[in-house]
Amino acid sequence: MARITKKVFNDLALWMMGFGLVVGIVFPIFMKLIGVPSTITDALWFRAACVGAGLLVGLVNITLAKNVVERRLRILADHMNNIENHLFEISGKNEPVDCDSMNCHIVVDSADAIGDSALAFNHLVDTISASMKMEMSLRNYTQMLGKYLETESLSAQALQMLLEDFEAESGAMFVIKSGELFLVKSKGIKDESNLVENSIIREVMIDEEDKLLDFPPSLKLEGVLTTYRPRQVIVKPIKYKSMMLGILLLGKSSEFDSSTVNMLEVFTNGLGLAMHNAITYDQVQRLAAIDSLTSFYNRRFGLIRLREECQRAIGNDGYLGLIMFDVDHFKQVNDTYGHPIGDKILRQIGNITRNVVRDGDVLIRYGGDEFLAVLVGASHHDTLEIAEKLRRAATEFQLMNQNQAIKISLSIGVVSYPDFSCENESDLIDAADTALYSAKEAGRNQVFSAV
Image 1 (cartoon, one colour):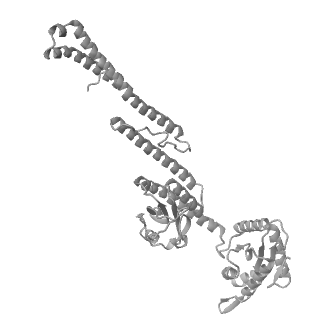
Image 2 (cartoon, helix red, strand yellow):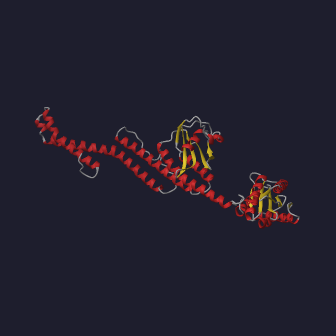
Image 3 (cartoon, helix red, strand yellow):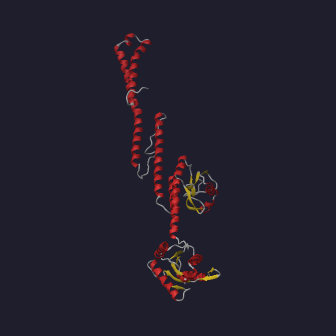
């Protein structure tokens, strides 16, 4: 239909009034054809009444159209404006998108073009709302990735956010270290101790390809309250520049839609970069903290660990033992045999010490040939016993150099908390150093206690 004005309903009014005028003009002729006397059909009052009636019908029609159709279109337009204003208001802000069927949808109550328009509008609102929610989730997720530098804390936090953003009930995060797969964090997983050996996980690790599984029989996932079999499970490798860094598992009681799977690719790409940075950071931190010759903590990082353990022991009324030892006449060994032999001896002292102390104890290269062993939770008796084992093990060691056996011994100073009252780690170090000096004064190759 040809446009007359810039407004559709004005055009509709003109066309309806025009049609009514035409009907009013034609109606007398039609009446004459069916036998109405000419005295009536040709009368001016009759022709005027027909034209007036036609115009009235057109006016009524346009009024009905405006009240029925335009009102519905106005509701649609008002909703569009409200949604636009609402989305514009929260755009760029870290606020949740609260468009749902209760406050953004239009009621679909007609099976016609108007109803189809309302239905399309509701679908559009849902799509925009979901897109903005995902955009906000991605923004928060990206900010989180920049906050964590340690691999384990990064992986654990990433898993929690992915579970929430993709509405998954269960999940697990694995990292690969030295070619081995380790479970870092899980939620809703039944018997997680065997998850690393699961055939599907292993297959993804080898093939480095995504898997979207329906009711996998070999994965049993457990919800927060009850055991359930998930509708789908996504197992996805985490990569950085084709390098496999870990594996993500998400389980859901309903199907993952295609847009979710596509968005997950974006999330895991960001995670791959963050995990690569975290692994690099871990490696740098380890290199900065470890003495290259003995693989003990160096003095700087070792004293930080000693401070932590000392504060923990004092704060919790716990036990802490400290052993300070050095190699007797080590300068003479260096002067006689050279520094390469001296380095071999220090390296072997490191091996001997690791074999004597317990898992969880902290070993520190305090100086050139001076070492500290921090015995976490060790009583005074335990500390003395370990120190004596260390002394005996050192005397049993010998290094062959051109058919000449080089033997060594250790002088050892021992202190322990709470038998020795202290306020901080410096008090313990001073007491252990004093005991070590006493051991040297007494002839070396001895264990002396500060208590």
